[in-house]
Length: 250
Ligand SMILES: O=P(O)(O)O[C@H]1O[C@H](CO)[C@@H](O)[C@H]1O
Ligand SMILES: Nc1nc2[nH]cnc2c(=O)[nH]1
Image 1 (cartoon, rainbow, N blue to C red):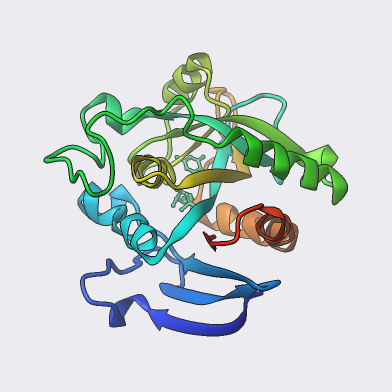
Image 2 (image 1 turned 90 degrees about the horizontal axis):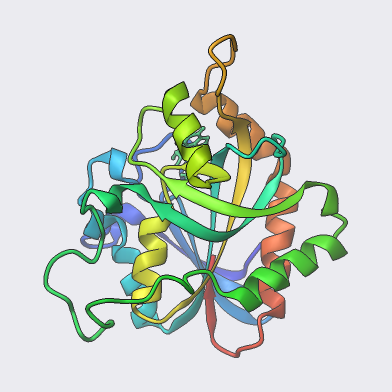
């Protein structure tokens, strides 16, 4: 929990997108965590809400201009990896930008040189030191049994995946699937912010035609609540152990 909070509702910030997803509060919270300045988004934006991809990622550029140096992203995701269980926390080591395969990338259009280069590298999208820090802290906190590492694949949503789609994503090397995060990571990396990202596995995707399981948002919200406290502890401990003096975004 941040100290000395100053809260802005998204609706009061000019040109800021509005959260439309059930369970996303739509507030920007500034404050300090053990003396470290932070800004938290309570609710992020998704392609399926109908926003242009540049609008979804606008907050990243605002944070860059505010002096943020490190971005910590969390999401809810469906588990593709057969070793994953509901409630696992996956430290993201890489991503597959599926909308990007079809040209839907937040950096499409004229490049704004004030933020970064035309063709940014993404093989170092997820900061290796911060990944290790998250894993080490997870172990220290006793999360070893449910702490995993893996590749996150983003799709546009809002429909959940078919069985055939899940099978393909699994074959492609994705460990978890969701509808967020990757666009923000691309824009954050373009402008030189460091990124660490965590997926909470809220459901296991259906890969078997005999299964009676059906993905649904209520289960996602329910499973998120179960680990909310532990995830918050992991994130806040990472923030307090990042070794630079400037701000952090959660
Ligand atoms: O917004 P995040 O945490 O990624 O949540 C995931 O869960 C929602 C679907 O239940 C989608 O928004 C999907 O992206
Ligand atoms: N695309 C997708 N997003 C999710 N978010 C939480 N679970 C899932 C899932 O199974 N698929």
